[in-house]
View 1: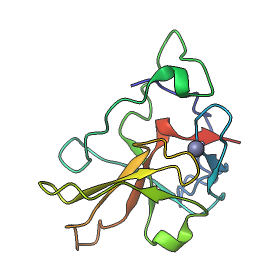
View 2: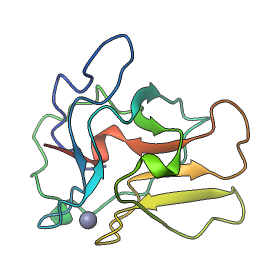
View 3: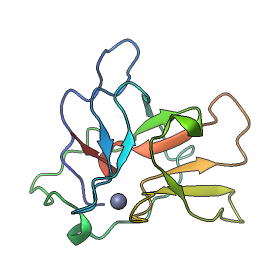
Length: 137
Ligand SMILES: [Zn+2]
């Protein structure tokens, strides 16, 4: 997956792990506002709990792929409990087999930026934006 440049200081506070920066669509020329600072929480998901996100073609992305890929946030997601916390977000059709809905950019439809598991009714239920798939401003 093409990695975007992720700032070292993604969280405002190491206790609550809220996002320090504004999260935006990574597509070149789009920049749609997805989440305001302090609205999401950083979580790490292992392969069993995260959905497979297909690759986004690198040429669509605003920032060039770097030579040495930083995998620090490979399993990192911004978790939002309530859909209303998003400024803008789109959803693809729910996948019948898994109940997964992929999150997209509401303005340009770039996807997948993250996912929501419609079958998860437990405490981990939420909306997940991949740390390496959004742009930080
Ligand atoms: Zn967009």
